[in-house]
Image 1 (cartoon, one colour):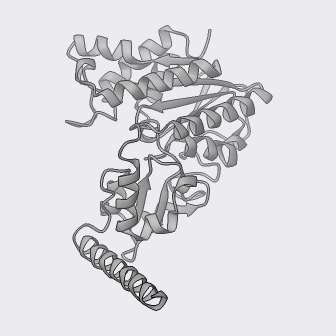
Image 2 (cartoon, helix red, strand yellow):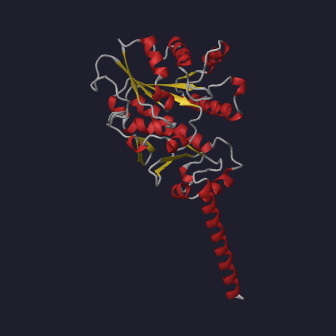
Image 3 (cartoon, helix red, strand yellow):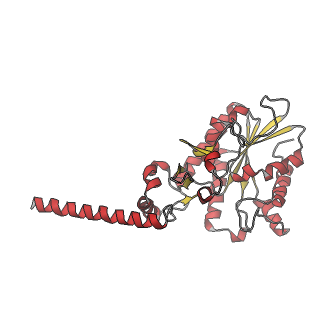
Length: 319
């Protein structure tokens, strides 16, 4: 009886293993990078025609980050500019954030309003970064420039944890943006197994679209940034960027993300500037919101100017 039980058990286990191998092979052949909707892949990185190995590197704690002290980024993690490293009498502004910050439209529009006599405009934005990466990047690299005022752009799509990133066999950068804390994942399996990603999809299918554990991670990260800056008497301001589409067209998730962000910033008593009102005004005045058609993440130059005017009128930099 015992031998039969062991034999049957081993047969079942072998059958399951063979089935999983077949499923793994078939899906990997058809869609090797699919996440089944549990989380998301930042596809533009893998699909880019450019060799991102010359732009990005891998580092624990970031997933990926720009290569520093190269043509694009300085050794301090800022986009190269003409300002000297040693501070003078001007107020040094440091803008941190994702691609919206990196592309600089709002920053350049602000410079038109505030001018260059009193201020230096430093940009540490990184394409596809999230808030956790931005704070970690500031603490490890950006703070060396000793800013007087840090301005963080918080995008509504920033509710992801530290990404899983690797270079595949074709030397393409693959980046997964999980909606599940890394402590709840096995990164190696997530990177290598489509069956494991399917499993994560199944076990998270009944969870909220915005994971509360990640909300807490981001809150703790912002609190850490706020405390770090306060110790050196550095101002922190947050620009809350809305989903760039007419408000009645927003999804429930967009509205939920906005609510969570405001709740987090209010609870931490962090000064922030909500750009929903000027965006709605821009819509009413038929001003184009989007950098390119259908892109609801990146502001056009026209709406960036509307945002800058609003920030100027509401004293982003003070009197």
